[in-house]
Length: 126
Image (cartoon, rainbow, N blue to C red; front, side):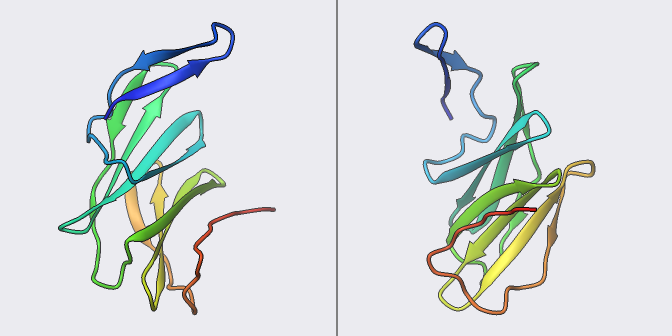
């Protein structure tokens, strides 16, 4: 996928290296630990796809893909909190949560939320 960044000092957009996965137009992003994380849900088959970008080296890294279950919905939100990336997936009846461990780069399933959330928003605070 094409990536550009805006340089406010120059007042112009600059071309950046493309994402390795070519993530589709339905993506969400969050930043933590000096990196930008971009997440998308591709279907079919229903797969969570993610890339991370290190602005200091200007390099993208493809993160592990995760096959989603039939209960994982197509609506999703992404947020970062305390050095981890969280993804909430919502269907009509259930909201599931995923967490990315940054060191192992492994996705972990978290306990299901008791009730589906509509509209879905994901925010963390202290």
